[in-house]
Length: 170
Image (cartoon, rainbow, N blue to C red; front, top):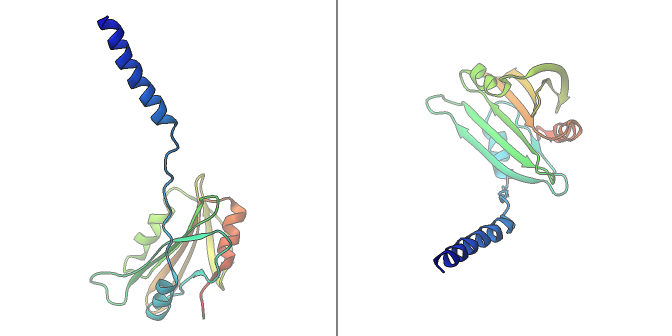
């Protein structure tokens, strides 16, 4: 009789675990972000081109945006905007004019191979790829040296479409 009770307890526990594992797990909710304020602030305050989508493709979501001044570095900034496609691919634009611009750039180019060049918003970008993502890099100089990085993990055509829709605004 004790064995039957023990098997019943174990059976209930197994049924609970099976039932729980078959439940649909909640999806990670991609936050919606209004990038417009960040883009406008960046275009007003920084001395390098600020790229962003002026019009988002249908069903795309902006999920990240910030413009941060760098501590101890006058008039030096880090800018980021990020977007998620309907297929949950991530694309982003990062830019900075930090004092050690090579360190900023190397954070994006680790382990990738050099490819060709592309024009985006009148700027020439070098193309880098690896198995997981594409990275396009533009380096320039205004008051300070700066770099703009376009990254993404979608298919090549989707990445190209994203990059060509970026604008430096007016």
